[in-house]
Each structure stands twice: as structure tokens, then as C-alpha cells.
Length: 196
Image (cartoon, one colour):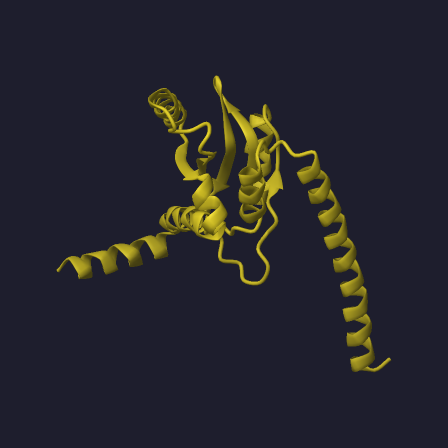
């Protein structure tokens, strides 16, 4: 068999397997969204964008598809994040509260960053003083539990969900860069140069 024939055969087999894997993933995600734990359309929109966010992992090509876990699986998240680096947990319970999304990002030194993303629809958030106070109290509790909280309004999400997720990606990238000594020292040197 010639080299070009072997290459063509390899490409065909690879393509067939990839198409099958993509179709299985698409079916799983469609089932997930249809029976979604997401409680609103803005949460579904946010999750669709979060799935393809690299969170600071500059891998080139298509980004890793992140695992999704439901509430009450904290011990599994610790184990799975060792393999997948990023775990997205919709409707994650944190004490008496339920976060729209908890995102767990493992860096190169094996530390775990915990992020909460809240998708604030106008009817339930900051419409009244009581709602604003409830959200602030909730944020304080979640931050004390070791999470960084990001809140986005429904308008922000509908207008520019990619921009919202880009903020999370930038935060993740900065945090991961700090775990890599060569990036961390290069950044420190650049900041010192700018300060002079």
C-alpha cells in the first residue's frame, strides 16, 4: 500500500471516529440541555458558552470539553478535576445556597481555583433592596467558602455572553500563569519595567 493510500485510509478512519464521538457528545449535551438543571434561558446560554471556554489552558485547536456535574458531588469534583483540569457544576450547592454554576479549575501546581458564576435575571436580583441585601449576604457566604464570585445580569448575557465568559477566561488565565514559574517571573519583570 502506498503512503498516500495509507494516509487517506487513516484520515477516513479518524474522521469516522471523530464524527461518531462528536455525535455522541452532541446527543448527551442535547439530553442535558433538554432535561437541564439550568433554571433559566440565560443559564442555558451561559452554559453553552462556558463549555468551550479554555479557562487559561492555551491548548491550540478545539478546546477541551469540560465535564459537567450536578449538585452534591463535591468529592467527585476533587477527583475529576485532577484529570480534566476544569469541572463545571450547574446548580451547585454551597452551604444553604445554590450557585448557578460552580467552576473548579486545577492549575499546573495542582491547586484548585473555585469560581461561582451567577446569572442574574432582573425579576429576582437587585430589583428591590431586600433582593440586593440577600444577594450580598449570599456572596459573602460563598466567598468565605473559598469561591470567587462573578455576577452577570441577564442583559449582559443576552447582549454578549462571549464577553462575559471572556472575563472568566482572563481570570483563569491570569491565575494559571501565576502557577508557572517562568510566566510568573516574566510577568513580574514586565510589571517592574512599566512601573519605572
